Structures are given as C-alpha cells and as structure tokens.
Length: 608
Ligand code: G6P
Image (cartoon, rainbow, N blue to C red; front, top):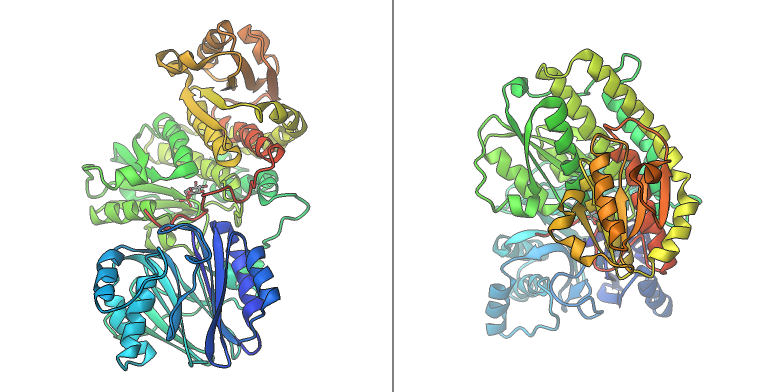
C-alpha cells in the first residue's frame, strides 16, 4: 500500500526522502515520486516502477531543496504510470496520498464545472484542486486545507507541500496511519515509525480526524473541526529493528530462516516452559468460561492461520469458532452478542477490512483480542487485548514468519482458554506444551530440506497448475501453500480438503498435474493415504510432505517425498508450513520472479 514521507530539513532532503521511501517498500508499490521547493518554487520528479527509476531521474536532474514530500504509490484509481504517480501538483501545492477518496467523482464534477482541468486518472488529484482552489480564492494554506478536509470521504492519509512556504508541511489522517517525527531543527512525516527510524525515534501518531501543521521548530495538531489539540510524543522502538537482508538473497529467505528463532521467542512469551504451562502475559476476559463460541476474522495468510486456530480452539477449549475473511464478515448480518469475544489476526494491524470488523465487533459490545505483529498499529490501539507475535519486522510481501508466529500464539491462546474453561487438564496441558516447545527445533530441521526442495522446484516451475491437499489442520495449510505458490510464482494453484477430492478436483488429475499432499502422522493420515491412492490410480504426480516412510505406509509411488522429522501431531502445521513456504519461494526464484515484491500485491492493504 502507498507510503508517505515528508521532511523539513537543513540541507537537501531528496536523498533522505528516497532512503525513507525505501524503508516503506515493503508495503508494496508500483510507482514513486518526490516534490521539493527549489528556491521556494515547487519541483517534482516521478517515475513508474521501482525507486531505482526515480533515483535515475534524480541523478539526471537533481533536486536540492531543504523541504519536500515523497511517495510510493500502489495503484488503486488509474494505472501505475508516471503521470498518475504522486505527488500531484498545481501551481499552489503538491500533495501525496495513501488510501481512497470515496467521493472523488462528485468532487471532480464540481471542480470541473468550476473550470478545473484534470490531468490524471487518480482520486488524489481532486485534493490538489480542492485545496488549490481555496488558495486561489485568497486563503492561507492552513485555512485552505481546513476547508477541504471536511469535504473528503473515505480512509486516507495526506501530506501537503506549498509553493513559497519553505517552513510548512501539513499532514492529515482519517483511517490510514501517519506519524510525525520530531528532530533537532528538522521535522518529519511518515506512514510509519520504521520509515523515520534513521532520523528520529521521537514520534507522535496522528489519530483519525487529526491534521498537523509541521514546521522545523514547532508542530500544531488540530481536529477536522478546527479545534486545537495536544498529542503525546512517544519513543519508537523502530530504530532497533534492522531492516536488511543479512546474508540472504531475499527478505523472504531471511524471514523463513528466522522462524525457529522468532517462533521460539513468541512461544517463550506465552509459555512457562519450565513449568510446562501456558502463561499468558494478559488476563483473558472473565466470562471466558461462559462463552460457547468465538468469532475470528482476518485476511489472506492471517485468515489461514485463523482457520488452523479454529481446530485448536474447538479441540482444546471446546469453543465453537465462527471464522470468515474480514471482507465478507463485515457485510454479513452476523448476530453478535454483547460480552462475546472476537479475535482479529493481522501482521500489519492496518488491514482495512480486518480493522472494520474489529470496530463492528466493538460496536456490538464484544471484546476484541487482536493477534498483531506491529505493536504500534491502529488495531493495537483499538483492541481490548493485544496478543503480540514477536516476529520482528516482516518485509517480504508474502507472509512467512508472521504466519508461523500467529500459529504459535493461537495454539497458546486455545490452551489457555481450555484451562480457563476447565476443559483442559494439567496433564494434557503439559503434554501439549512439550509438543509446542519442540516446534522451533523441528522448524530448523525442516529448513534443512531446502536443497531437496530447490531441486524439486525446477520441476514444479514447468507446471501450469498445482493442487495442494490436506486434512485437519493440513487443510488450511494446503490453502496457504497454494496461496504462497500463486502469489510468488504466478502458477495457478488450489488448496483442497483431501476428502473433497472426489467431489470435483479429481477431474483435473492427469500426468501433468503435480499434487502436493501434506500428510503429517496424525489421526487422519490413513484417510489422506486413501486420497493419495485415488490420485496415483489416475496417473497424478504426487509430492508428499510427510514423515520418512509415509509413502511406503500409504503404498503409493511419489514423484518426490519431502521427509519431515518425526513429531507430535497436534502442532505439526507449524513445522509443516516451512516446506510449503520453501516450495513456493524456490519455484519463484527459479522462474526469476520478484519474490519480495510480487506483482500487484501489497504488504499492508489499507483499502477495502
Ligand atoms: C496482504 C499481504 C498478505 C497478508 C494479508 C493480510 O494481502 O500480502 O501477506 O496475509 O494482506 O494482512 P495482515 O497485515 O492483516 O496480516
């Protein structure tokens, strides 16, 4: 999703802006741009594609101004061309924008009728015209912004730079994040604290409906109504978080290899390993024993984590789980009882649909527990309880370590709820805890299968379609494996519950279709073995992910077997996620795809 940066500096700010935009690359984007004041006059450079293209333009024709704004755009309205790239400007101002102006058509028609000509396909351009129009009518920049903001509908963050105003940036936010960074005689604006980490760790987050007049030595916060307000400055931890690839070729590779460590760290946060008990760092709602069901909402990979969690909540806590993708849930007429519990799962804590569900649940008197990787996110601020995943910053667009950490937290929560509800006895809890403690080591072992998977990937890269099958918690994992493969390699892939094979997908089986079967040694493995035989009988090419000897036991011939270490069945989904991720990664790398930033995808999806 789009990234915003603004700097009021002492010397030329363009290189710093590009540096900060690079730290926002992880959000996903397809064009970039920058505007500064050169001798007090607005100047812009914009480019389609990656930041490198913008840098080439800046090399050819440098910007030297000491104040500027920059942007990485993830196209929503209009193609990712240079002309549609931000900043959008007129002779009065330049503006960058994250999010969507929902009523842009109405505003555009009104402005056109007044004689404004539109040069782009974007929704953002109306903001430039609206504010520009007010300045033309004689208003000061702040008054012009104040008059425009109440007219804008939707979720957005904005940053403005004004012609002739060498000591003023204005930032505004409504449903999309914006942070102000405080420096010594310099000030900054950014979509998150990570972007500003090299410059300052003193951060103020704007709240929905806030806007700020930022000058080098002062900042003034106002509400859309015009009311002057105070906002706290806080110390951000973002500077401590290293954003580099280390020795790895891609962020995704680094993040997959970090999993044993970060899953271990996350488990340590929720378990008393010595006592063999769950020990949550927060109190569960007091009425947890009386609840009969939970609601779970999430998007993308986080949704698949939730689907796996559903099995655990049902099994360990005897809680029925109503789970849906957030974009569906928010528009269903779900009866929600006051006093109930909703769990939101999100890496970024900013995903628009998940956030909308969180707010919906709270409006219905539910308590919201959010499993989040970004502690300073909007969802973190709006939840009753935050259950952190300690994965560290995840830069690769395709989620890997955040996913397995989400699973670790869901497993611990399900056990804690089981205990609180009196349905999980201490002996069973200790047994489950010992299985969980083994997970990081099993993940490290699974990572050792990387070379074999790299060889297999060369074969998979030739496929047009791939089918993933699994039962129990391996079913959502099959969905996640298929998602990873399609998002990274652009090969069509589908995940199915193995038992559903005969209800349709079996028609697809032939010698050309690789079928990846996820079959840990769990109580349903014999059922999965029967499904494998159905595939083999029709000449399908099976790739089995299972314990050594699983293929013989199932009496099937496979095209390849990824032999996993022996492990307890309950949390096998966590180590088994590793080969699923590696398959997608190596197939895409072999095909020469951009694994860290796959086409059309965004890391943090702040629009519906
Ligand atoms: C995007 C990302 C996915 C992620 C999903 C949900 O689609 O590309 O990796 O799973 O959003 O994001 P969240 O931050 O809420 O987990």
